[in-house]
Image (cartoon, rainbow, N blue to C red; front, side, top):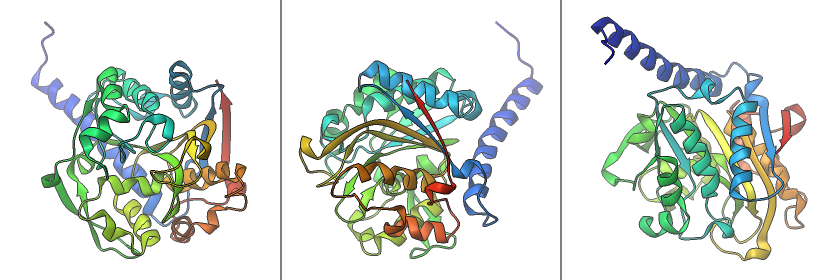
Length: 318
């Protein structure tokens, strides 16, 4: 067995701590320093697939990481990584109410293989045990070697919202606060209250107290969620998008297969790009990012780019 000195242990510990601190500090400064957006803030990496098979989805996830600098650029051995999908509903993946489990599994496995400990969770509207199982998320976590957790209502901590539009503080799940790296993995779909739900709104699933209470001034609150929780990476599931009767109704006729996964470090920019996918439908033919209150407000706060013409859009196909 290799002998490790006390000095080596200290050095390794410091390197890991610095990696985690650097990730949070870097992304927090990007979002909230108010000194303008970086080139990365304005960049989205779009991966298109020819089908929705599990093998293709796995290739899309791997290609996405390759094109943004490789998994090692983000995930270091020993990191505590949280993956936050949408597992809000007791629905099968084909209904596009919840994040595609094959995509979550692929991302989780890449992180596990990079040496991270990975935890997956959400605070569902429906009964958690049913939602986790039927959405395929239990199996996805097991297959990837990741942990899956049912949210413990005792584990929420108060976080201040600096410069909040409506909120001064929020109850945020402790595992999010304590993570070294946060991957926000929403599904893109119609929402009856916010018009569309994507990365920014997906953070509602790690906020405590009564969910319904946030529907008043919803757009301001969505902005405030993102001020309180600076995620490190967004991997948005647009393999299937629910174009009407969302967030948890509709039929297969409301689903559009765009076979797309979008990577970006800025949730505002990722959401603004994703709006364009809905323009393929008659219902949303004229929708623009500026017509979504939370995106318009976030842009005014300097949190991200919502003008697609100003984005660096990198498209690839597998």
